[in-house]
Image (cartoon, rainbow, N blue to C red; front, side):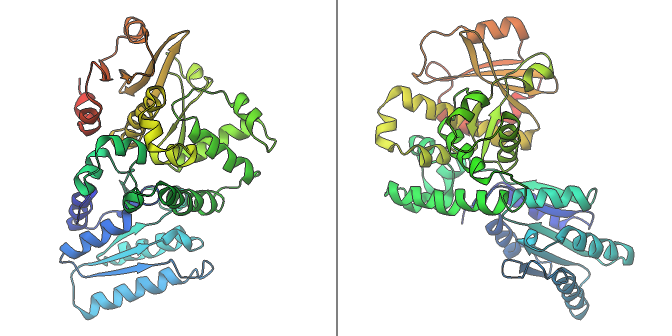
Length: 396
């Protein structure tokens, strides 16, 4: 079975002396539970793997009871260390307070129980960690699957990856696009909105949130003002509400409204956002256009290619600690700007979507980027760029 890069990271941390709770964080359907099971098959430390999936949310004593079970088993086995893994931990009310209580008790009593937590809701995990467990945990970030991973694991070629994106659970449905779309909508989009967001955040207008997500995905790769978006949405709201909802969708690693790159932060955050999905599957599933039609229409395919590059960069931003922007000045534009340690890298995607554009030249004269890259026609092939080590680019 294919192992993601985070496999080695988790296995190594489990082997270290007890220090921090290990939290595996990422969007839905990226293989977090599978990763943990793969690691448990290879480690020798005795362990207890639990899931709170079928536990009543109000059963706030469940975590303490399971923790005591782990302590008892550790004693009976006369083990010097023990590993407790709790999946779907966020489904228990006040889970972070319960985890904090038990973790601190073990720390005080020198009980060598190591802990791994994971859940399907990135937002619920994030809220619990920042509220109660500050200083007690380390994150292992699992982004959407990259082209390299989908290619190695399933043999997906670059064109099908650009359209169908990086959800491994959808691979078996790709031969029937209607079935694949249902999978994305029913197994990924619906739970992400209904459970992860609407059960986590107070959303005053749930229908507006859903409409914003669906419309925003279909605009991926396009700049569009929130005022113009508001005019296309049926549920009344205001620009501030839309901006807040877009931030929540970004935190969920579904849809981002990229800001324009500028010399000062005020101009960045007041700019017209450029919509960008974190996985091209979201664009394809909600656009309703077929792979054949997309692939054979150069202008349309160009937007999918640009979105694939943008999604790749967004997914790497967390891991490599950089920020992603776009840049435009009148008719001159650059598709993506990476900002890292006060230096920037300019990336232009050439895919037949636009003809003349002096954006890269103008941007380079004004901001002196560390690197300027052309990805696609006349530059780095798309396949090569999506497989490359971005970290090396960030080095001076």
